[in-house]
Every structure is written in C-alpha cells, then in structure tokens.
Amino acid sequence: MQRSLAQMLASWSLGFGSMPQWLGLSRRRFRNLIESQFPDVDPAVFQRYGRPLDPERWGEMADLRNLLLQNMTRNSERDAVMADILVAGCMGSDHLWQDLGLWQRPELTRIMHEYFRPLAERNDRDMKWKKFLYKQLCEKEGIYTCRVPTCEGCIDFAGCFGPED
Image (cartoon, rainbow, N blue to C red; front, side, top):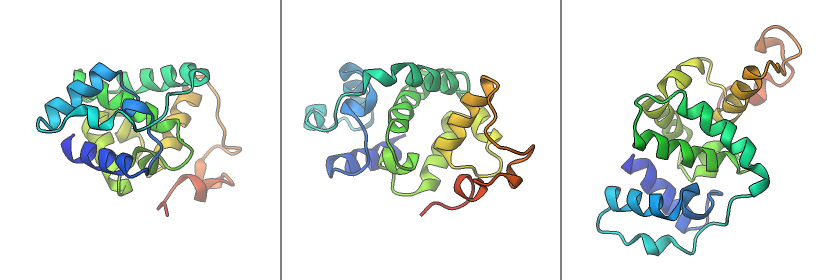
C-alpha cells in the first residue's frame, strides 16, 4: 500500500489526479492511514488538498463500495480503506489510475490484484478498470451495454480494452 499511497499523495499535493478531501476517507481514517504508512509525516500537511465529495453521487459510491467490499482479497480494514479510496477515484472524469494520481496503469492493476483479487481475475481481457467496475454494477442489475453477444463485436471495443494513453 505504501508505494501506491506515496504516488497518490505526491500527485495530489502537486494538483494532479482528481481525489477529494482526505482521499475520500473520513479525516480520522485518513490520519490513521498516514500515521500507519508514513509515521514521520504529519497528516495535517494534506488538509488543504481536495474538495468535498458530491453528495448527489453517494448512491453510486455506495454501489461501487459494496462491489469492492464483496470482492476483497482479505476481509481486512486495509482492503476496506483501499476500497474507499478507489471509489473516490471513480468520481473523477479520467482513467481511474489517473484520477487516483497513480503514475502508470499497471500500478492500479497491481492494487486490484492485491486488494480485490476475485474482481481483478474477472477482468481477464484487460478492460479499463473504471469501465470494468461500472460494467460489473450494470451486469449485477441485468443491464448489458454491448449490442452483440460478445464484446469483440461491440462498436466501443477499442475504447474499453487495451492500452491507455
């Protein structure tokens, strides 16, 4: 977690990414996270970064959080904290790894496999992570967006799979 969190915090403090206040955590959980991962850093250094989360998206955030919590690798507080950070990142408008402030997409893939392995293993065709998470929510509700039975025939295939620039 430390490497990923360091990337997020560095990007966040430089104005990159789109993470909200406290990385989407409560102030207390953020403080505990910083103190556990970087004991020599004062969490108050980060109090001026980010904006509040949009309350109109709380229902969407709850759905994403439930999806991640149901697919945790370990049933731990550490995994739950990462779920909340990822949910906050999903509220941004770019690729999830960029919204989180990670430096490369493979770092997000590593996070997904470490913290949410059952979910990550279902993304066996390298769908972009934010699209994949929302697709999982839609499928859970019985909503299928592809117009043909397989993704290969979908007109948005190139936009969903493959490298991100």
